[in-house]
Length: 125
Image 1: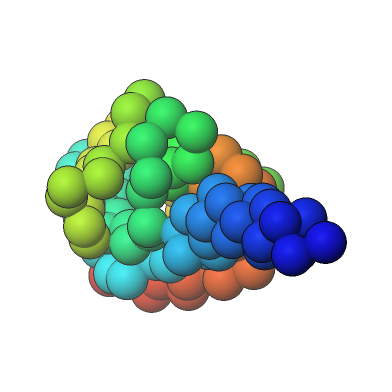
Image 2: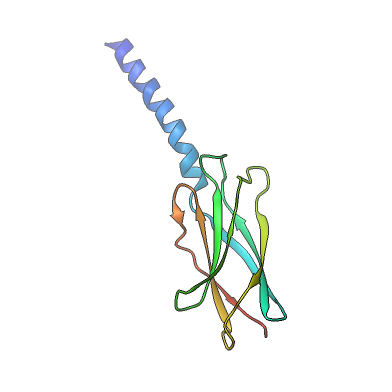
């Protein structure tokens, strides 16, 4: 009986170690975002923070939306940034409708999907 109890405790400990990796990573956080107009298009730089653990769980996308939900552009992140946190990536050539003075940035990770956080960014025209 004692051996069974010890085996059970060891199994629980091992199982929670694996789940702990996912719990630490959590949702991706948008730390900062900037926008710069260049002619008819815009360039966006977005800084993300996420507990990337490797290919199985990492921040993999950020997107630029109008306040009414129209997708303007997205930056796909092709690899984990385990050793580089937070990290900034840019996207240029984004067409933003005339008269729009604010956009919404959203981010996603490969396990939890799109974060609940919405980063509102005022545009300086």
